[in-house]
Length: 492
Ligand SMILES: Nc1ncnc2c1ncn2[C@@H]1O[C@H](COP(=O)(O)OP(=O)(O)OP(=O)(O)O)[C@@H](O)[C@H]1O
Ligand SMILES: [Mg+2]
Image (cartoon, rainbow, N blue to C red):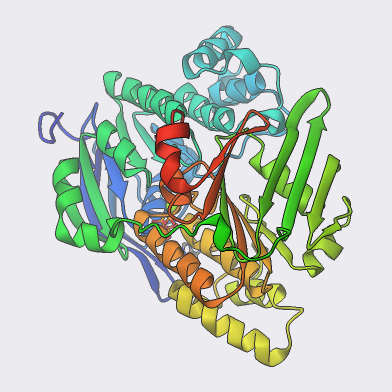
């Protein structure tokens, strides 16, 4: 559908949002027609989420106009904006923890005025229908904490559907989803189009965004840089330079090049159960000193469980040896002191502390001079963190937080760095930065890397060797160049 066929539902004119001296969104103008999906792309920190939050009224715009069906929204509180027909599917889910899936959807269905509370007797039926539509019918009675990652995202979508928005804002729906889950979600978003709703979609999965949207708008440093059909925008030179970047270069080293006879990390027949569910079964793998190993697996395959076992965060059967000596489960502090540092997918930053304070905490164990040297080196790798030293961690954009989490782990000067899904939410161009950072680590330090990813486009070029973890078991091991022919079925 092209713009101009019908009057736009949403019309944004000269939207600006300032945080002190920082202009997160600058003079941004665009519109979306009924039944149209507009994709918003741009590097991390370019202002995409801020634009959405300003439209939703979660953040108050500093200037500009936001009209929904001709009615001005700028300056209204978010609950009024929601009532006028705008729904936001957040970048990070925040369901009511004590309520079940069904109850969460019902709450979203409640009319806002208490007087209408009992007017609609069929809330239950409606909630069940919405759950079925988004694929939650099987987990209605579960609490959010027990849901799989994709189901949490489905719940966010269900809550948005329940409110019948004219305009749906969707922030990074595909992050962390498998290819088939992405296809499911794309289909759900297409249904919004069929129903004549307007959709504003942000995501770094360029391929899936291009396949789904009617038009793309690219932002950089808060500003509009290009707009049009996805294929044209992706060809745009500025977009290529600031967002897409170049292809990643692969440089695997043969296992025989590693001279240590006994690998520095040995995982032997490790098993973990959560109640009756087996999270890891008979998992064995090894990593040589200085080697980069990728553990590839879809959501729920058991990657994080294995990393937590290595880090001493959970009990397991079997044995894990580090430098030839068995590690003791349940002693995470001691294990960290021995040089194993895990950068968790949940980031675990201190949100109320500044970027600098988070980094300093990481460098706690280093001497003053060494700490300063390490900090400089990291600022060189991630210049944005240098510029944002005094910003509170929780106000960083999604991708900036990911960079801070990785940098904080590196502040500890680990011998073994475990990165759990580091690419989650990173723009392609930042993947390139991270890629270069890993290459430099490989060339200039003796660091050993264990990388957990479902993004094989990133995992393969950075691996000397690859393991595939599938349903709690290692099902393949080999060099990256054999992956495509022998193990790629689920991933490419
Ligand atoms: N409360 C705040 N105080 C200061 N700066 C902020 C605040 N909120 C956001 N910012 C900054 O505004 C810029 C835009 O952030 P935003 O979250 O909109 O980026 P984004 O395009 O969604 O990025 P990503 O792709 O990484 O999610 C970032 O540099 C961020 O650090
Ligand atoms: Mg964002």
